[in-house]
Image 1 (cartoon, protein in one colour):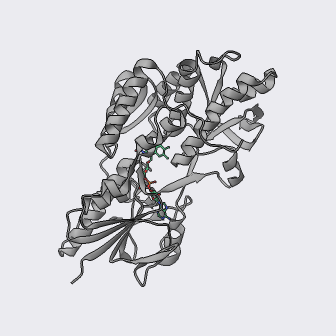
Image 2: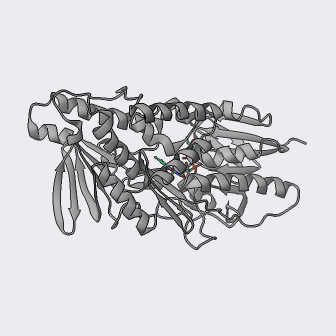
Image 3: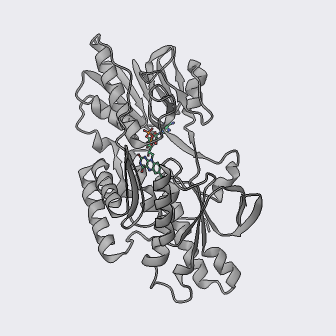
Length: 422
Ligand SMILES: Cc1cc2nc3c(=O)[nH]c(=O)nc-3n(C[C@H](O)[C@H](O)[C@H](O)COP(=O)(O)OP(=O)(O)OC[C@H]3O[C@@H](n4cnc5c(N)ncnc54)[C@H](O)[C@@H]3O)c2cc1C
């Protein structure tokens, strides 16, 4: 009899951890991804700000799963599902499954203003990160050559929309670039004169963290000359600037660099799955899953990570975080094997190990249950945790060396303007 076929769509945190957990089991695993690498998204902002190079935070899936003899890695884009025929439809083929794990994650959401995407890039892929890096570095170059004071200031104004962890990390890194990394590099401008505005619609930065940590994060941002603004709603963005409404006052901020860190929307496959299975989705297009992460009426289809809405633990959806996706990946792998052996599993439970956000050198906030930490200890923890979770030993070593070098020299070695249209 041929082995039980498990198809995993997506080699991000959820899909990769599911595949790894199935590596020694008596099943046949096919992992399909439209990219040939696993991307460590939590460090994307370091690529966007020239601290790390793309290859240091990405690992070839074929290499990572190379030792799993029961696993094949397929480069391909999934476009649809035939749930009755139990087939995954690729852009250029199809794959049969007995169990299906869908882990295609999320993408940016511009709240109905997709035209802003061109002007205000988000941060989700390597291409996004190198494009952000290009825009940030190019802005300083343009300012250096700009004779007109108002235009020069527009080049030196950076607006980050969204003060969640990604927005805060980007703003902090920009603060360091302006005040530290570039301080001796220009002759006609003072990079420290850059205005870095962090806009947030809620009433504080890091709204997902407890208020005391938000306040500490805000203080640390201000130390880096970042100007956080709460209750600020972006109403328009164009190539000349950003329009913001705050407390009934509308303001136009002239800027050439807007970075988007505000909303996320589920991958399009969520909608497809819902159409094919009758599953429900939330407003962000994420698929509502059962307590065992399957789709109602389809115990053989499992949806995990950023694509899933799991509300069975607290009544609220679990956050879109890497540990959630990793734990869900491991859970579905165990579930599939147990069921094959005729067993059952307890519902999925997320073990929350805490939350971290870094702001810059020696600056971070961390929450572990009732324990709230900020400053150097939180930053040190952040460094340790991120090194630990990088997928390959080789990448851990490379990133460690780069960080130590950057720490000593205060440099950012990957300050390259490599792509771009202008
Ligand atoms: C900038 C940024 C910073 C973050 N920082 C943190 C952090 O500090 N801590 C934290 O815990 N979390 C962080 N996150 C969130 C975390 O990265 C996600 O929660 C996690 O990646 C979700 O894992 P996933 O497997 O669901 O999806 P992903 O990791 O996004 O993986 C999805 C995979 O599916 C593939 N795919 C998509 N569509 C298709 C298709 N149609 N066909 C084939 N393949 C497809 C993609 O190529 C990708 O490899 C951050 C996210 C971002 C974007």
